[in-house]
Every structure is written in structure tokens, then in C-alpha cells.
Image (cartoon, rainbow, N blue to C red; front, side, top):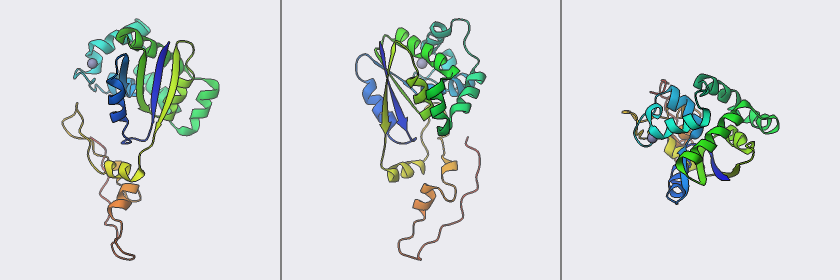
Amino acid sequence: MTRVPYLAGWGRSGTTIIDNVLGSHPGVFTTGELWFLWERGLLGGRSCGCGEPVRSCPLWREVLRRAYGSNVPDPRLVKRWQRETARARHTMRVLRHGHPLVSVFSKLYAAVAEVTGATTIVDSSKLPSGAAVLARQQAGVTPYLLHVVRDPRAVAHSWQRPKRQLDRSAPAMPVRHIRAGSAPARLRCAPTRPGGTTCPPPPAWRPPP
Ligand SMILES: [Zn+2]
């Protein structure tokens, strides 16, 4: 029986710290955001925590081989399925009726446990749809849900700052989250007295690097 604690919550809520703490325990393997293995790892060419691109990382290659043999699901199809279920309003539908992603992740969790020898796999994917997929897992997996909630002021403050990316030369800029009307934008230009400061015009939007 493999235990899978799933860290749910908003980005910049401190899930990485919890992930690291849990991962330091013997018998625990942390996958990071396993939900994005397909989009970021296999399609996007992003790197594993070991520094190797996911596609050439020995661990993930072995996990994929054991999970699917020569029939690794098309990452574009998995990405499409994930887009279909990403909205929170679709979470209940996945819980009630299942989804092809359940089988995809069932094999993946089993293979991670087999390759790493871990009895507990921490998945910090954060999305509700990923938690729903995990909840539908059959025998062999015991799901746990950890909903991480951080003071929203700290979350908003964190989103104002670029986050260092280990596999990218430029840090990720949360430009889409500082548009006018967003919480960080409002905090940034909060008036110190009634009628005092007015918000500057929002920065021009540009796509993330
Ligand atoms: Zn690796």
C-alpha cells in the first residue's frame, strides 16, 4: 500500500517547504508537481530536480517505462485531458464519474513507488482536479489531502516578486498577477490615508518568458 499525501493550495503558499520537510523523512519520495510531468517535463523540456531534463532523467525514464512500457500516453493528449478537468467546477464530475486521467496516474504512482522504493509519495500538484484524480485511485494507493493555506497577504507579497527557476536563466515573473485589479496590484498602491495615493497605471502585459 502506497500513501500519497497531496498538497493542495494556491501557488506561493509554502508547499515547497512542506514538500522538502516531508521529503527528508526515510521512505518518502517527493515528486514535486506530478500533474505537470507531461506538460512541463515531457512537452516543455523542463528539468528534473536532479538537473537533467525530465525526458533524459534516468529516474523518470525508468518510471515511465515501468508504468506504461512502450505505450507511454501521448503527452499532448494528457495535457488536453488535464485542461478539460483543470477548472474547479469540473472537480466534482471527476470525483463522481472518473476520468481517463485516473488510470494514467494510477500507473504513475505505482511506478514511482516501485522505482524509488518509497512507501509514501508526496505530490505537490496543488490543483483540485489532481486531488480528485488521486481520490479516485483504486487499491494500492491511500490518498491524503493536505490543504495548505497561507496568510493571503504573504501570498500576494510573494507573487509580486520573481521566483528563481533552477532550470531557467530568467526568473519567472508573475506578470499576469500584477495586472490592475489583482490583489498584489492593490496592495502595491494601497493608500496610506483616505484619498491619498492613487494607483499608477498598470504595467503593460506581456507573456511570461
Ligand atoms: Zn532526475
